[in-house]
Amino acid sequence: MIPDTPILSQQYRALLELLPEQHHEYPNIFNHFRRQEAGQAGEDYLAYYLDQAQVPSLTCIKRLRLEHHSSFQLDWLVLGLGIRVIFEVKSHTGEIYFDPKSHQLTRIINNIKEGFDDPILQVDRQYANLRSFFTAHNIAQLPTYRFAVFVNPNAILRLHDYPEYQRVLTSQRVPSILEDLANKHPPTISEEANQKIEQFLLDNHRERGVSILEKHAILWDDLHKGLPCPFCNKRPMKRERMRWQCAFCGTRCTDAHHKLLYQIALLSNNRVTKQLASQFLCMKSPDAARKLIVRAGFIKEGANKNAIYKHPELIPFIKSVQ
Image 1 (cartoon, rainbow, N blue to C red):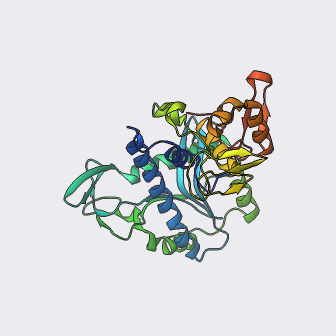
Image 2 (image 1 turned 90 degrees about the vertical axis):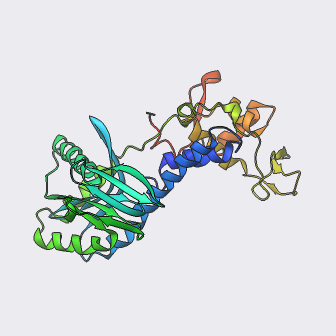
Image 3 (image 1 turned 60 degrees about the horizontal axis):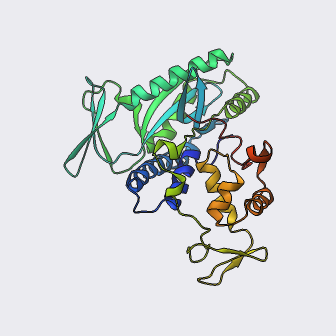
């Protein structure tokens, strides 16, 4: 199963909402989040053109991340009955120059030059990993094509003598490419077999998760404490008579703590304790915080002082951190 929003993006969003803007690491966190969002937007943008392809029985998997010897991620994997296609998505804008000797991209925007890795080398490495994964799991190999797709309409591609120019596409070319390849390669496996392969890949998806506070050397004490009001966003709300009360705008609600508990789960690698929850909810009693955690549907592991609580929606994805 692949989440609609990558866990890493969710972690960065949660961190941005809880970290004071004055913190020295805030600009770096914001840049990481912005890159995550841009990459995700580019991948989502390509979905429209994939749907336009007039090819029966195509299955498209977005952001598939597998582990075999090492981890690798495919922006889009298209599974057909006679072909497979890997698309590496790029959202770059500006003038993009492909250097055939160094295998490096150079982007020029506002008279500023910036270098990037060659996406064709990237997608070819992904293919090598996928082929090895299929071999290890006795999945039949099919002709597999690899392309780099530039989805930003403001990108100007300067291919010149680049030898792999035919594998560098704009998003508008994707439907015709898939149709041409499907016509070239008639079905060799059944639709049922293709669906089984798809399900096997989804079952083996491993979401990327990191110890994000540790990565950026941020302490729990650096983060905002107190439950923000869902209406005016001021904090802290106070717990009164089984409800949360905002002292600033008067808003009252019963479940305002659910979002904050989920954010704590994201930042703690899904290991919430009653002490941590009570600290962020500004509750004097850890046991009272524990009751809120349990009522919110968290799953308890361990006992007594060693007990931790896991958000059920994150359990399939946050199994280990890297």
